[in-house]
Image 1 (tube, rainbow, N blue to C red):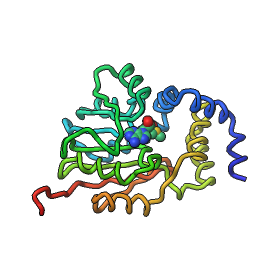
Image 2: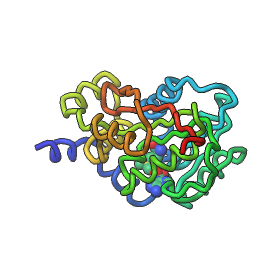
Image 3: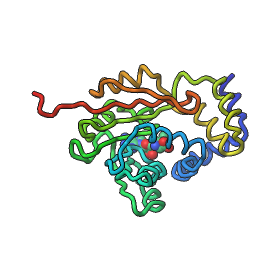
Image 4: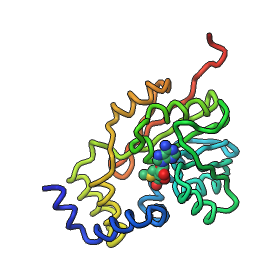
Length: 227
Ligand SMILES: C[S@@+](CC[C@H](N)C(=O)[O-])C[C@H]1O[C@@H](n2cnc3c(N)ncnc32)[C@H](O)[C@@H]1O
């Protein structure tokens, strides 16, 4: 059975123990993994943002991707509901802006950002519609709302091929196995329906890690002067 098969992946127990004992250290560690950070960086690069854009990262954890956004010339803000994550993010990236709160009630005015992005957040929150609506609200017309989630279409065979092509071992391999086995996943159609419910019309989708994760991007077209 699939579950037993990936339970036997070397290092899985260590990954699970780390995740349970200290999610902060776990997210700081996976943020540094080559396959993980490369996926996030490709996703951001594909958005075609402009230098100087104000970018909010929702669910930033320890801020690794927020730092990449800032390094690329965007005016980045990281946001997470976990005090512990944001404490670590501020410690690791003292020059960056981070805030704590619930993404279902973002503490920003309408149209504050040029882009609002969230990786592996929409699939874990219970109120994904509220979170997406808030991401939409705080993004200016013409701006970009982008989310990335693990895909329901990704199979065990796909996972085996991915592990092989990446040549992963040790913690890196076990972390990928844990993600494949345990992450909450979404289908393209579910993702598209959620974006539509949040008033985010046509979404463009991409996939990364040979289909393990999918991303949807929508351009905000809201007209605030409309009745
Ligand atoms: C699965 S982790 C993903 C972290 C990071 N974006 C990544 O891709 O590695 C989900 C993150 O979202 C945060 N989060 C969950 N629910 C949230 C909410 N309602 N508002 C803000 N952050 C939330 C968690 O604290 C956690 O840091």
